[in-house]
Image 1: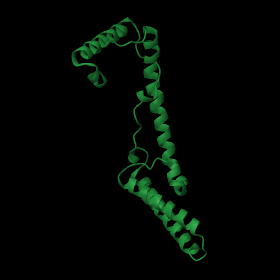
Image 2: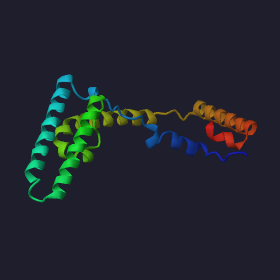
Image 3: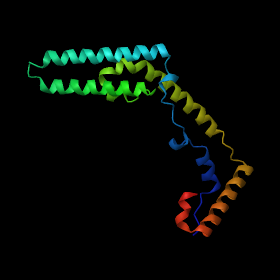
Length: 162
């Protein structure tokens, strides 16, 4: 029931490697990327665009452009979704989903991406400075021993929960 643990060199390399799952998520709160005034303007701009698309739909309704009308309906629906997310305080993050509103949402996405980059840079620096000295290695060996002991006591099935 023993585990094949990585060598100290491999452990040290892994400890200082910025794997994706070591990064926290970036906040999706719109209030972190916009002022209340900007949020109000964002809502107004989205509603205006929504109405423009509705007018375009009505114009085309007699011309037999059913595929275009379906696309416009889909775009309007995605804007409704964006407005619902904003009402819950969330940034509509997936720009491709909100294709007819990309230009309206772009400034907030730029701020989101900048915050994400800054967070990732900070976490990457922390990971690169993770201790790999004798004290850290001894702590890792102690952790491994504890895992092995718990595996033996509880059986292999419980190992995954450790």
